[in-house]
Length: 147
Length: 474
Image (cartoon, rainbow over all chains, first blue to last red; front, side):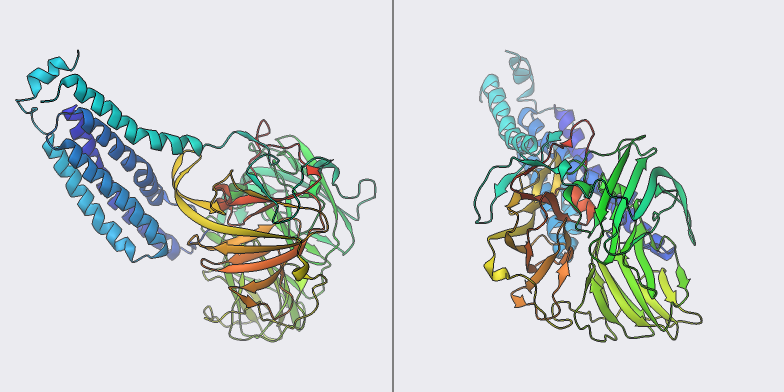
């Protein structure tokens, strides 16, 4: 369970990196397209970068955050639930900031900033689950949990 | 220390607390695969009498059945590669091997017959006559007025072109994909010798006029041209004229009363909308089509190149008032169409989704009217984005915008640009029985649920959304 917790937290951190890469790819692609005589309008299909950002941002990362929270209830990670809740809260905040940014693009700057907060918190959560389980809990509960 | 079994129990309960609400909202958002327009959503009677729906089947509300057509057109729809002059090949949909499809031209009062055959479009097809108030069975909406036409099958549309004007036609099956990829064409009723057609369409990112990319040129039809601008795209488009002043002589197929000369202003043509401009063409003029490399030059020689003017023609006060032909004060039903947006699931997908009167598709209001009703509708947009609202089978007249009364030529429209934070009050006479879509013509928005119906009492439809013909009007 600890390793699952660690893996999920790590995947969320990696997800944030993917998001930064995808959104840069998306808008540089748009600039190139427009230079080539295309228009960017309501008729334009989302490009690969936009698509990755939407799928990872509204699907994969929220799903991972929910799984991390659930796993935290079972995994014996010191402060694991607390850190999973921090991650979950920042993901919700990130989604909310994105929503607000469509109407007020200046909020988008906070969306970018909050991404770093999420990256850091997910990384710290992963570190808490690194190494073996705390000695006080592991032998007794590991056998007791099956009863 | 808590006992291990107690700890496990707490963990399981906590898991349920997290998952139960998510599962509930996810499950509730799923759209049934077989949905009747008759039973979906909830009835909104707009303060008029409530009544049950039984009676005429929409399939009986056809155009003239036995007369000989004045204009007969055969169209074959295909999914194939075609060429965009000035740009190159494009994969999409064609009618008779071209996109846009053949231009259909009729005189006022002509009986138009279009035989549409689907050669190889796997999803099925239909054609909708955008802006033409046809009888309901000819409206071409998959799942509402007909079933999608599968590959190898045909459907015959017949209607009388009773109103002169600029119109267009397009698929209304999986329309957010089929229209954008080319299944559309131009329909003109009562053409003039001065006509210049400018149908603008953006294939993904390639903006074209009459299917061609870049600076396109046409010969001046005379000293004055009547330019029929058609926006077949998903978003509103500003149009302007470099090198001459102009008059807006028609909007959505209705002539403007006493149009005045305009210079240094753009005119907005919303998605699905049409505007006819009268332009002196003694010298070459350039029509700006929303920016980008594609423009239309009328006449020989150099035409000036300008940018989009900041000011726009406001149709609320353009031209001179005249009687509407009915009294909106005597409205027998009044509806509100509030467009919002909220976070949640739509058909199981998390995201930010449209609402109508606070409800999400398919749990949306069905606006119920009876034939002869005078109907008022208040369209209010607080969704954060612009919506080009399109009511099938009717033209509505704008009464006010944000509380400011319309004072110009009666602004009859079928495709109304409603910006974020705008409120329009419109009115119309319920004079065309049927089940009519009333939706956003940014077609991906419609596919995301910004769609409802205007339903007449005493009319029913046997068609279903989804089901075995796989009807997906949007």
